[in-house]
Image (cartoon, rainbow, N blue to C red; front, side, top):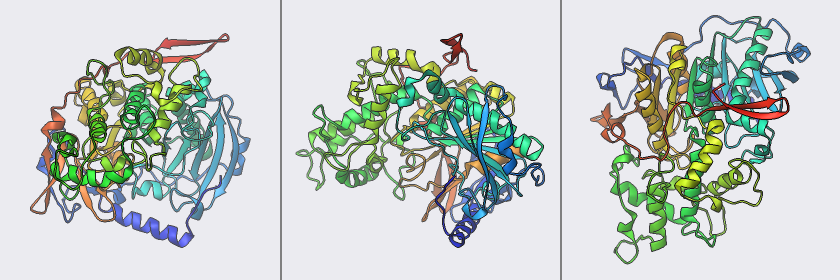
Length: 574
């Protein structure tokens, strides 16, 4: 597989810097109680005596050398793998300098699982220490994504080649990651909805067993956005597939997201297709919001506490140099309010949080009066090929209406196959699984409130939820990274440590080029007091109650497949 690489010297320097920066990442043993008992200084977050750095996280066991040659893998007959009949297309040695995951040589394997699930699996040739990592995809996928792992900055088990790593196209070949055309085929749609990652886990583990002569000791999953959706699907439907799971900005409430995206697009684009605003005003709007919401170092640390109204700067009512037109005030209010039905009830458990205005660019707000945004494209593809039983090739994002009837129709058609909102993770907990959910508070694509609401449901459903599942919220961070806050974290090393030696993450360290700060588990936020970082309870997060038309519950899931030439759907998870 062709990959874009950096020159070897630059690559090694980059990896060295990543390893050095990993020393900043602190993971400390935690209880479910408030983490306030152990604080760290803002200038040095790795000095506490009970800390564990990511660079010290190692896989269990010693290096295992392959039992087979790389080239011989293509001769394996894998058609008989139960539930995942597989054929390999290629197996070639990839030089360390060409490996996008780290400075280690790999046997780079490509293949297909029936009917159309393409994958890539990198098998370390001289550094494998018994672990398997599966990485998620994004958007509507359709392309193999195996060259990077989210939330893994400075993860030595990854960059050092201790893990075999695989990724896939989520069950279909697409013209782009936004295309929804695959939804016209029920099998491909089911693979996208819930089955693809389970199939790859089965096949990849079999290939690992054959190549090394022994099974992987621990397996991990790491994904963001749609990959976060895949991650939670695995925890809910297939609780024994992975020992540790990292789910970033998860699109797990997939059906309701259709209303969220459509609401955001229709809030900005009028009936005539013209936008009420362009990206040119977002910088000034953002500065006004930061000041009104008491930002610290350019970040709103607890955005749920801010209720600033854009009407306060409506043109004609303010003497300020910057103002919003009446139409713009309506648009911004609508975004902050979230998608609602005719009775004012939320159709998705979330809304745009104040402080993420800059990140609306090209997602919700266009660059010019004639530009489009990703929210339009996302919903249009769903309307045409994914959310209705039949295709509507001329449909658009404007076909989504915000009524309880429309919501119930789409949920009845899609949630059983496409959603991952079941809060009962007791089987995953019983299997010893560990889960880290993380979400950027300034995410414009998938509102962070949705992850808070889901985690609250897990807390209500599973006893002692924090003993196996924790949520981390990153101030100022956009969708799967970027934004205005420090967005680089190593949740992967954190979950590996949690699985292998029981070290629960009391904090993660987030960083960018200029800033480093800790992130504490929900519902605590990091506040610097006299140079010392302290976890402070956010009562707004703790007491959050979302009046949502839907619910987080068990029993809605379905499984589908062909039986004697008929497509059959039944209740069930797997």
